[in-house]
Length: 472
Image (tube, rainbow, N blue to C red; front, side, top):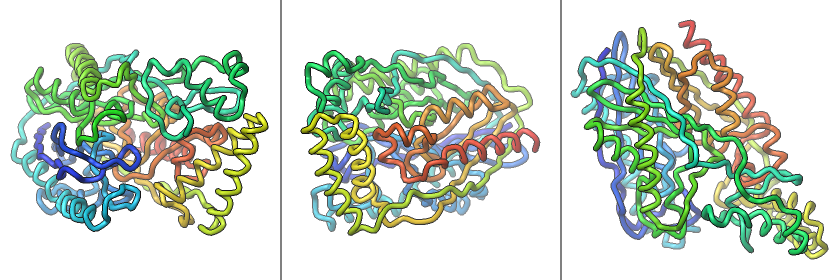
């Protein structure tokens, strides 16, 4: 087997809007963003792209990256897996009035950068092909606990999001020290008397499932690829609005310093998983998390074992899933005002259960009207699932922010215990949830553009794809 790696700087200009926290604009650059491409060859050639971006590109635009790589290197586009680290301090891909700066100025910053992005990534692919060399493949895995948590706290009324506290109940990014009171504050906001909330509300200490596996795939003397399930949000407010690769970038940098090899970070099924952030120390906290992860990578590398018969296979499958459908825009805006009135009445009357359910509906409809912009979507969408295997190591891509319950089920039912799930890969279609998670509410449900049942359809299709790559 042969492999090669290339990397190219893709840092956008300062002043560009940021994608990952609502309506922030960058004020400078903290650290550079990179496109890294790992090319692998035996009887065929495949490539894995790792981008220091929140999304690989909007919706189906990842094919532009594939096309550029195929034109410049000859690698078939269908054999290219386009992933991102999901850093929340990366650039936006389109101008929006909510960013608060003139649309014309936004377009001047965004559009040239987006237009040249596929060709810049193709340069990294060209370098990877030029750097091809004989290699051996090994795999290691270690368990990382204590640095991440499930932000969907189960309560009798459904789910209280551990990112949604305070008077506005809107996408608040809290720190670990605030968690014990966060659910109590949400109950009070929903209309429960403070003295009852003090007694009734469960502590906001996270107790939901996580995926602690830190998987490491090593191409000897060429590159290291790592996979971990956690949102890259350590640089969230009140951290300064600076462009950054976040803790995935720090983790990769530390691994590169320690091993002398390029490191590709890929994001696992961590749609509802966040890192513990002990204090709002800004980028120091992102660096700390990156250092902890890098230490885990070095442990996994020390314990890694050769992959037997690492023949390269690539398969893909499109699964058609239904989109959520909303009322017409005028009707939706009327319903939103009506529900907001009902919510305020329920709060005043202390009907906290009703208020909570109303707020879930308000958030979902408001997301579709606003930041998501999905109010007019209809019908179905095709999601590409892709798998690249090297012996019994399989990289499985899903183009969503995948809740951990789905990732854990895929790992449990897979034929291999060396499954790396790469999310927000080959497209971006926001959250992927199980049916019961729609009923529970919470941020992920509000930010999900797919209809209930889509998660189960993807699980079924992904398991069939894994069986297919096993049999081919």
